[in-house]
Image (cartoon, rainbow, N blue to C red; front, side):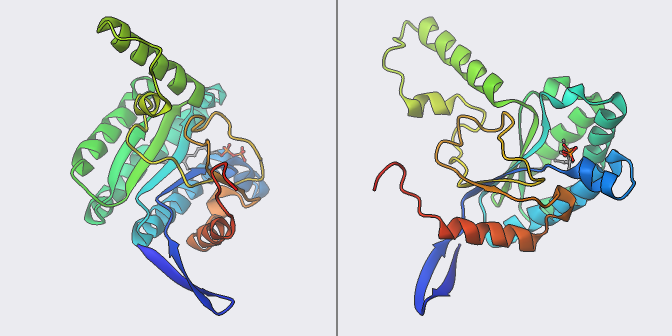
Length: 245
Ligand code: FPP
């Protein structure tokens, strides 16, 4: 889909970004500011996510990747970690029907094998139920870490090449990229991070080479479709040269 807008009287054809990636930060601080437990922030964060998934689907975005749980998030208290996974299970139970109706395909990147078994079960059910859908791919980064993803890709490629007597010398970036968990998915056009921090925190390290970064101070639970539209507008204002002039 493309959006048309007037810019100084001239009509511009603006392609909807194909792939938007989001680091949903600030749930804890949102709750603390209100004297609420951190988990209340994650709960509100899930409601914000629901609206963003719908907005992306309605706009015709092809891929939305969200950082739901990093490999570093295990350092949090047992109470918070188990609360986050409970919220995910609840989200899937409540939203799967609507997501299916909206033709959304759910996908997971990261190591699902270490997450609580009820969350694994719910995720696997969501993957199976939506696997034939052809609209928005809602990519959930769960127990995900970018460096580990690169190391795993290297091992896999090495094993396949050496196992088949192939040479490591002719590996291209394109071929290597296919071994990442996002293999076949275009790199994110935009990476948004809410919550005021300006870092990547081990998210999509390989895929972010030419992404536009947008940082906002807004805490994730307050990130609305209107805020997303502002980020997309900022993206349109950037001039992507991919190293050219
Ligand atoms: C970061 O805020 C947020 C998280 C680590 C968890 C986000 C998870 C959800 C919103 C549930 C997602 C559900 C599905 C199905 C994908 P923070 O706790 O780091 O906030 P802080 O920086 O203010 O402490």
